[in-house]
Length: 339
Image (cartoon, rainbow, N blue to C red; front, side, top):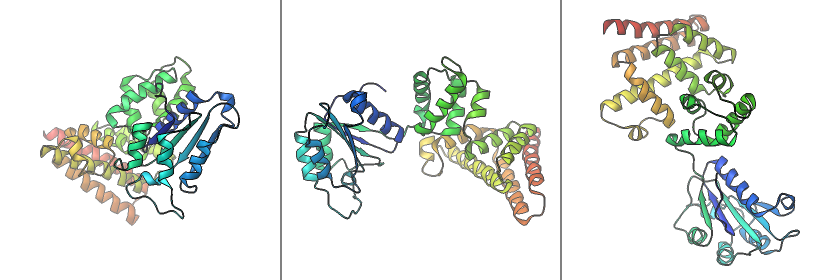
C-alpha cells in the first residue's frame, strides 16, 4: 500500500478488516513518531461514547508532542438506518468540527459496515473536507494481484500456477490471506519460493476446499487420491456423513452451473441463483464441462443413497464412504466408455 493523501479527518468504511487495519496504521505512521504513539493516540467506540466527546478530545492540545491521532469506531450515524443507542449523537458538533479541524489533530472515523449513507450531510462533508477511503472486500478477480502484493512485502515468490490453490483454500479474506502468507514466508525464508507441496501442506484447509479436491479426484477418475484425501480428512475428525453432504453440495452447484450455462447465463448472473462463494461458482463452471447431465443425475442419486445408508447405520461409515467414492468414479468411467 502506498502513501495516503494527507488530511486532518479520515473516514475508513467497509467490511475488509485487513484494509481498515493497514490504512489506520499508515495514518498513524505518517503523523506520529514511534516514541509519540503511546501518549498521543486515543480511541473511542461510538456505540458507547457520544461524538461530541470525541470532538472535544480532537480540539484539545496533545499532552506530549505537537500532534495527536483520535480514532472513533462505529459511527452509527453514517448508516442508512442508525442503530438505537441509549444516547443521541450530536452530529452537528462533528459537522462544525470537520469544517475547521484542529491542525494538531488527525481524526479517524472507522465504519466497518458494508454500506454508509452517502446522501447524508455528514458523509458529503467528510468527503469534501477530509479523505474518505473505501475498505471493501476484495473481488475474486483481484486476488492474484493481492497474492503478488503480499508476496513482495514478505520478500517471497508465489508462482502463479498455485494462486488458485490460495483462492480455493482462503477465498478473498485479506486478513486470512496475510496470515497464511506470513506462515509460508517463515518456512521458505527471505527470497524463498513457495512450492505447491508446501502450500498444500501449510494452508489452513477449509471444508469447501476439501470438497473441491474430492470432486477433482472423481473428475480425474483417481480412486487412490480420493481415498487418500478421505483418510486425511478422517484424521481431522471429519465425519463421512458431513463429507457426503459436502460432496452433494459441490455437485449440486456444478449441476446448477451447468443448467444455467446452457441457458446462457454468465458467472455474475449465476450468483443470483447459486448461493455460494463467487470462487466456488467459478470453479463449478470449470468443472461442469467434465460431466454430462446424465452423470450428474446419477452422482446425486448415489450421494442420496449413501446419505441414507450412513444415517440408518446400515454399513460401517468409513467403508460406506469409500464405496461411494468407488461408485462415483465408476459412473464417470462407465459413462466415458459409453461416449
